[in-house]
Length: 246
Image (cartoon, rainbow, N blue to C red; front, side, top):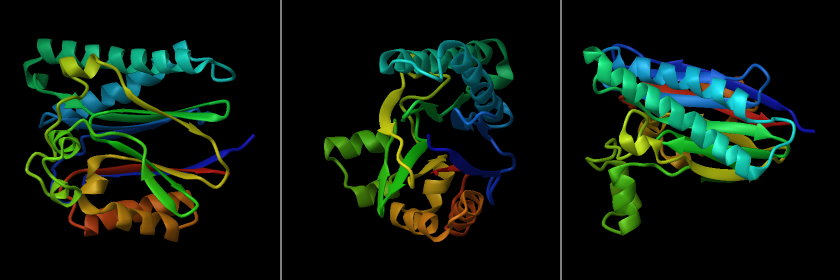
């Protein structure tokens, strides 16, 4: 049975007053979560904090991490994220200071020989495998929708004015519509990255791949990704988890 080694880092960055990102690493390495809050002041911070607190509780309740079916795991992840979405919406309604709060989420759940990767919003998961670097998640952004419609190309998407406008996130009605999922077979030697858009704001996929290939240790790789994104001009909080299958 393979094992996981990981590194993690989250920083406020050069342009924000507070860090609205949050992450969670399960002590038993069964799941990993990154969330990027929004809403200003302390609202975004509260939303992402709720996501990384509430989702793990539900995952623990609903999943048999030794042996479970794909269908049950997909349902459990949807339910866990849907529950967090409902709680964030409810708190936003009763507390005026948290009225517009929301958060993205990307998570990786490890059961048997499969990684179940899901997201809502534009926080991403990538896999580096044998020199091939691929995005495993789909952004729920207006820019991605325009890209899929053929209205803009990939180069235009990188700097498009709607790049950070989301049509689906936790804290919105659409956030309860389910998680976009990818099931990935666990393979020794694979490296995975979970990150907020603060990383991709400062680095292209090609630059990101280069940084991940240069550092063998996952913590050094996580540190290097954050530093490179910061130097690359990221204007957001910057957060990532790097996972190695060993």
